[in-house]
Image (cartoon, rainbow over all chains, first blue to last red; front, side, top):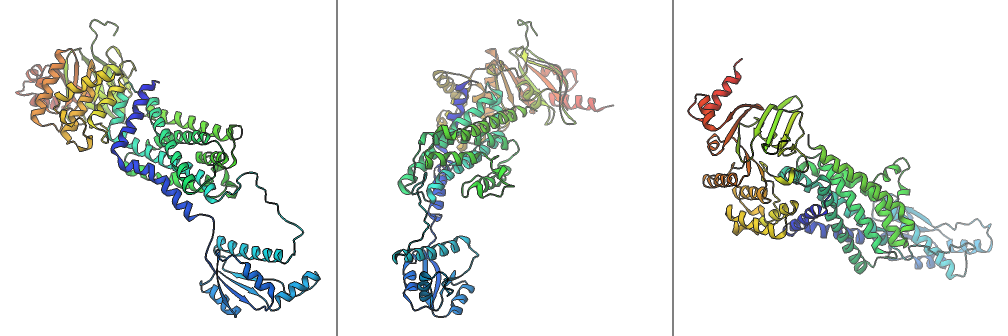
Length: 370
Length: 247
């Protein structure tokens, strides 16, 4: 393999981008747009949830708990009728009816003095559980208000949780999400651009002209891999800079390791794009592969939810998808601050994918000499 | 094939190429001498392009042998010595004329100075000097064809395969193309051209008439016309084709 010939292909891709502003915009804007949309929309905090409080109690405990409810999370309305409150939930006007029964404060005080007291000390939460995230936020708000009230009254729980994070101190959803979107953007865009570019090379006859020249198939693939490796690292830099400046994301590890992961993922993606392109005769056919790339990556690679949350029957599939290793590796670097000694498995897995896919894509080009 | 003194530019022995049950090249025996301008003539589907692709190493042989510049067709050492202009424009539309020519120059290992010099000569020849920095996507079909031809000649190949180079080119430019091919021949470059324009055959030092993958006649245009007892090469082709169809 001659480096100068492979590099000629790399330069050709960059020279082409100078005149192809649409692709250039896609490379720059698409990952940023994804980060902004997901970063803002999925900031992790559920707010302004409509609830109706029915306080049938005339004591101070219920008042104190209501005062401690998080008004950012809950949009509170009041009524005297439990039936009316439930109807609000049934008609979709509120997510939950929170009911403090008659004599709630007296019962709580009595129970504090005598644990065997049998009075009603339960706060009734009659919720619309059709949305798990919202009902979880409501329940968390009520529980937090209850604990805060008890603490203010000097009643301490005999058991407590000492929250001392080993990794990810102060991490929010965006911190968890940025490494995922980096892997996703690089994988998706690189595969897609290579796929379309290669279909174009075939239909326009340029691939044939290259293959009639001294250019070897391995040099064509290497030229593409170098170009998209560089583009992938550029995208990663952009996301890291904007993520740090706008979303104040946490980066405790060595960003250089994140670049290595991104570059490897880009090489895997280039090879996959070339492989898929051999099955598409026209660009319209190539576009049909997009769901095939997006869906497994989105659902199974751990970008949004952990692989541990995926049913065990599907979990092996997650480990067959290269971005899984990219996402996990980058999260470990950025949030845990891990080095090569910890993420070697992810690097080896990506290297193995890269080598197998590169060999397969070169072979597929050589096989075209039918 | 070891005799380098009388080594032909192209030689095939009982060459076959099949795509499934379809035979595209059927027992083709060719010998094209160095310095010839050889015209491969025949209608669409006669096996011209398939033969060119085999000789350029783009297709594998089903049976028989093919030699180019003394080496087996497709041998890596041949590629730098040949030029190939495919039927399609085969240019990067998002690159300029200069960028396309520079790319192919770089692929053939040419220095920057050599690329600039050859590019200037060729742009003058194809009369596109003013369009040097224009993206290919902004050029007309004929202009693209000219750039495609220039890209295949940039590295000064010994042997040039031109697949339908004059299709879509206006008559004036077609005439200048043939003048240039003649100039190349005088410089010792072997040019192998496929065409279905019978009138272009008179520019060739030798032609081969192909039909259904078989070579039905070979010689100078005059020889073929005379041996078929026809008035023109086109009539000769039709006469020979009819003879081939008779049981």
